[in-house]
Length: 258
Picture 1 (cartoon, rainbow, N blue to C red):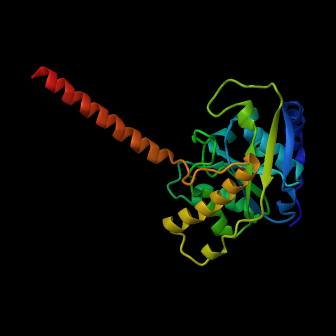
Picture 2: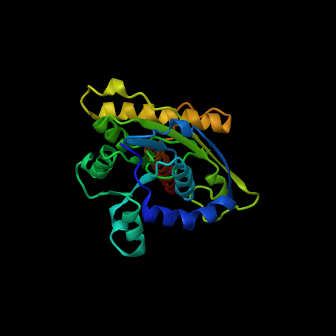
Picture 3: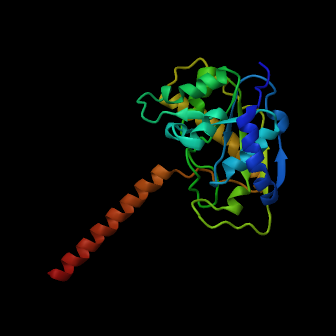
């Protein structure tokens, strides 16, 4: 299938965004040769700043395969933002769906039409203290195994230096470098003949994220932690710690009262 025509809305978005992005970032973009020329595929990208979707979209746009991001379905309903989301072909995610795969039905349809669909598998900006990719959700793996499309791992770094995770303060100077490294497709073929169980999806997701993390190690020139940061585990440990402190405080108060 040939590359999709970029269209008015994407060109309009490029006209608006490129003049802002070019002075903000120097570019170190590698691996464009790994972006498929034809056919549907997924890119799995790490997420470390509120700015990086725009910076990554610039990279992807320049490959000639425009990105279709997943976004909350509510953004598509009203006003200029809704018109822009629909016009640029972004993918609505129906969070109210009770079926995990049908929540990504539009992404599956887009891949089968020959589109490039961008997944942030972590689901949100990483909470790893050092900015490494954290444990991921299984949406990208679900769509990949459903469609058997190529999954291109992509690591990026630099937007987080302009606008750190969960921060409102930008650091414009000195000018930052946006590093992007796209790798070869992740081999998921060993999962194709298996039932799409929770364990299979988890393992496939870990394979995808390991590839993304290796690319980020290349960009940063250092090793990632052996075990990815897990927000759920962190919340459980914090809750246990709080419960232990509360129990200890109650015991101390009881001893003081006797």
